[in-house]
Image (cartoon, rainbow, N blue to C red; front, side):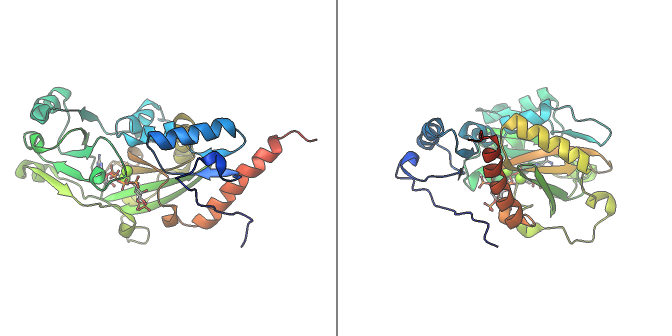
Length: 286
Ligand SMILES: Nc1ncnc2c1ncn2[C@@H]1O[C@H](COP(=O)(O)OP(=O)(O)OP(=O)(O)O)[C@@H](O)[C@H]1O
Ligand SMILES: O=P(O)(O)O[C@H]1[C@H](O)[C@@H](O)[C@H](OP(=O)(O)O)[C@@H](OP(=O)(O)O)[C@H]1O
Ligand SMILES: [Mg+2]
Ligand SMILES: [Mg+2]
């Protein structure tokens, strides 16, 4: 159905203010020049909705700042708990890692993730570390995050404005105590929970497969929308194995591939229309 929306590609070689007119600007770029271009445009065109502000997107380009808002939340109402795994940032010296891990009291195994996300494949190169000494082989800057057993299933929670859609993906299997005692080393692992790893139709144990409670997701999404100042993102969530309602957020992605979200055409176009309609409502009648 034609909803009267026209998508016009932005020409990056020309100032934004010379293009358009636009009702909404959608983007997933970063960098100084682009930020300056967008900021300049926002100031001159306050009536145009820019999704989303570059400084707010920037917050998700660092795996430490990305999870800070979740850590600050206190969502432990009757619908469950949401936290972030304990983690440590290693900025420089890899030889100090075993000592730092010990000092911080982090429990093995650990997931090692590049600190900065720049859209490159390398910033998604992750390692699972079974002992603290092998961690000295890794290249900082890194985040070392406690691995949380979650029955091999991850929930991708897509947010589009006020809409929430959850899909299930296969993830890393649990690591047993026995395996931890037997194995040493750091192992690179591939992108385990990409869209090819959908577990929506898999025959799973209900205690692992059950989606996080809707009221919990609504609270989490509302809080994060406000605190992050973003309207288009997804959250990777896992349920601690053996619990019903203890959840961890392990990753937040800005403007993920919405094509992989069920009903995305309707949800996305309705969202764009609602932005324009709410603007017209706010405008005083003449
Ligand atoms: N703390 C953790 N405990 C258990 N599993 C984890 C943890 N951190 C990451 N994983 C697993 O590793 C995968 C990739 O981690 P993460 O989502 O942080 O990386 P990413 O490169 O940002 O992924 P994306 O492609 O979603 O952007 C997760 O989907 C999950 O399967
Ligand atoms: O482009 P960067 O900033 O690296 O972000 C990626 C996310 O990290 C991934 O989660 C998205 O893939 P999935 O939607 O399959 O999880 C992935 O979706 P895409 O492959 O559709 O672009 C990206 O959004
Ligand atoms: Mg992820
Ligand atoms: Mg990510």
